[in-house]
Image 1 (spheres, rainbow over the protein chains, first blue to last red):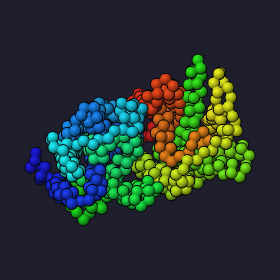
Image 2 (cartoon, rainbow over the protein chains, first blue to last red; image 1 turned 90 degrees about the vertical axis):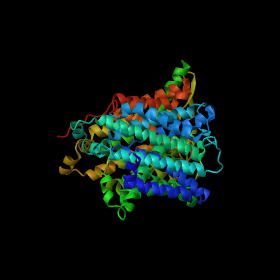
Image 3 (tube, rainbow over the protein chains, first blue to last red; image 1 turned 45 degrees about the horizontal axis):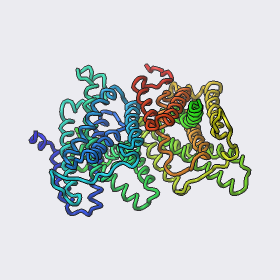
Image 4 (tube, chains in turn red, cyan; image 1 turned 60 degrees about the vertical axis):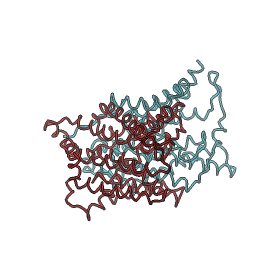
Length: 319
Length: 298
């Protein structure tokens, strides 16, 4: 398995790149470190959306899993007293995974705008519950401040940063291997012609269910990581529909060309937002929205299409 | 009994308001197949424009009833200006793209318009209570209601009738039905589809703005209040059936009354009810309760 992963060119370069990033994190000033960390965390969710997008599905409700992951972390700390990063992170993935598995039975029968709308409805149900329940923190949410790694309580955010980098590498490699597997190759096939895939003897519904589950787990992981990185969860910045919109936005901005693209795109997004906020606190949405339109019109392949050309031509079969 | 009357009245006025906003969304979807996230921005622009105009009128000692005229003028202006700019400059270039990509583009437009509001009108809230104060309040079944929110019913009925009449009894409505039925054939028959699209979009935008403009006197118009409206009107439109005008009517009645019951009886479930019903409808009848019949292409 490991050698298989190492033989894959994308994974090899990604591991090297992320290792360099982790090393560079030691030297980076805190605000850059934070931005990169938020970007990587969000990138996990975008990676999940990429898996769905390659099948031609776009979810306007992935904030559901993002929020479930984030709230799993926060509630476990608040009511369970758990501070260990691994435990909290695991809980985020499991909670999101369970919901993704169950809702997957319903959502796997939907396509196009109906898929998007039903995902949106589910995520808004969670939003509605969170906003109105005092026990769940209502509109204020909770803070997540205690992060320990196997009993060790580090100062500063660098260890958490390394943890998130590691998670991203693992997730990215797993998705890359999945996309190269037989089931993964169905991804594009389903988008092109569902009926033929059925004729070939594969169950489209099941293939989509697997993808949906995977993307739910990734979004849950992203939410969990974000909660720990940000130190705060609340419905408006974790579960509202604008969060789902942002995630889809980053997916389009990144491009579907590679499993590395989501992380690059998410980090770029984080910096665009920070700078836009610095430059024009009252017009940052304008800058972000303008970027979105510009990407849709002038760069339909996303940021990745800029990097792809001078780089490896041989990997075109991934896209 | 009093509670039931209150819930019913609350529900109906909320439903009327939802209907005015969502009917624009559903018209745009029905004709152009665009799920327009920017609709929330039209709503917000309508509210700001109306509140600003009413405030200006009050400062210049215009009579209070002028507010009612200004509400409509503001909505129509917002609809024409924003509708034309967005349809001409952005959407027209995107009709061949995937639906989802267009949704995302309208999300971008929404973000931009939200901030342009701040740049134009500033961050301070606006109050435009004059039309509401003018009408005063009335006692109904032992409950005091302000007359203004009762006029909302009238407006909703007027809009509903206008849409029905326009679609079924005018030449323009027939053109619209033809374009909905088959865009390419209508193009071949010499119908100016681009024009139909533009007018549809302006009409939808105007209705969205009218919803905001009419509600402006009852609230404080502050930044960011278009955000919730989008998903609420999505819920209404999805429940009734995307693209169906009677659907929008039924959808808003359901959402309005359910929400009123929830607010009075189970306040924790206020939002849950709306989106729970939306999810349930999508699961049972994905096309919505009143989806228009689709022609099967061969």
